[in-house]
Length: 254
Image 1 (tube, rainbow, N blue to C red):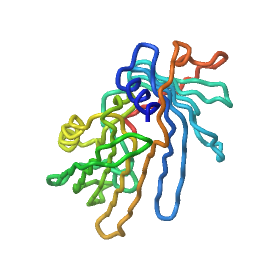
Image 2: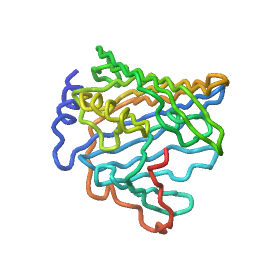
Image 3: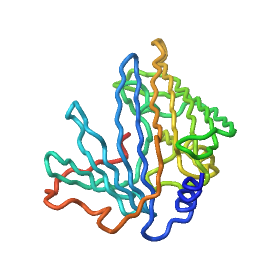
Image 4: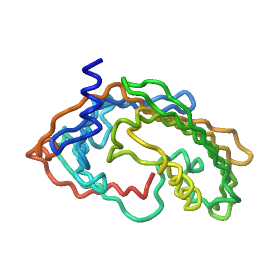
């Protein structure tokens, strides 16, 4: 009990060289297909270092992401190829998940008004910390035109978020965004009321194109443990010997 209290105090009042370390697992499910990734993150104030665990497929573009400016920019590192390139936030349509787009990724517009609701309740204990559970329900209709062929679709999403108010919000913690300004303004207002570090996040989305079957997909992220961790300037330094790669991840793309 005393150890937990000490960790909690360290997490709430982060001094200049103190931070948090945690481990997470993310799973994606779609029509019987499932993929999983996991890793560790070291965080201190506006800096973080994300290290992903081994990818058996060998297809991942980067293994380490480092940011020192609150995730406005990040250095993405491929360890096997000894390369590094920069990811910068840019203006434009930002979508936090591809699941908010019509199947096929057609450029679409909002058709009518979105229906958004939310509920808040105690979320139990996760990774040793008391949480608040927030459930956000979102339904909206989309219209797209592909080479003169109209597409109408419905997107229904349920996002469930468990946060620990006693822990600081993370610099790489982003809110939901559909890329549709009117919807995202409402989602941002909800996000502004969410306090603390996200320890679990589940997003389930059902997309239906008129005349076609419903497609339900989900992505979930769970934090397994959180501990206090000491950091230095070198904790967020790019490893030596990396070659700069002329490639930028444009986060306008989902």
